[in-house]
Amino acid sequence: MTMTGDMTEETPVETHADWALRKKREKMTVTRYQAKAALMQSGLLPDAEAAVVAMDDPMIDLAWQEAGFERLSPMVERLGAEMGLTDDELDNLFDQAAKIS
Image (tube, rainbow, N blue to C red; front, side, top):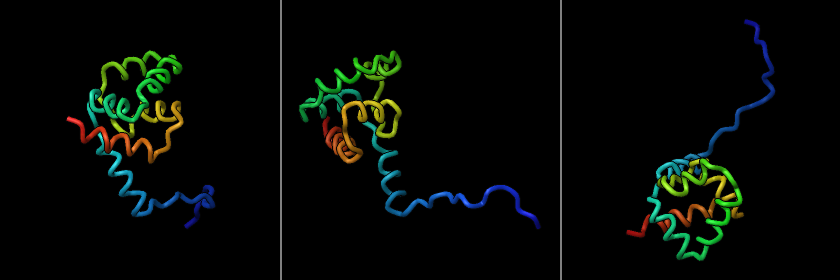
């Protein structure tokens, strides 16, 4: 049997801790109200609104106005990056938001 192709590059193996964190984040979904209330309680709502405007992306604008918030969505990832938030800070905001009713 002859093998072809470059076999030197290995695919990283996901650890159990990484898998558990990914699964937790996949389930993190909150309503628009919950997300914005958590941002307000944290003093971050004005920063988030300014970040949405600064991104100047009609799809982000639409998602900010209409969509619920999913932790692993591209919009949340971009917004968090624009605001300078870490993954842990985003997780904490989602945990806080999920407690708001």
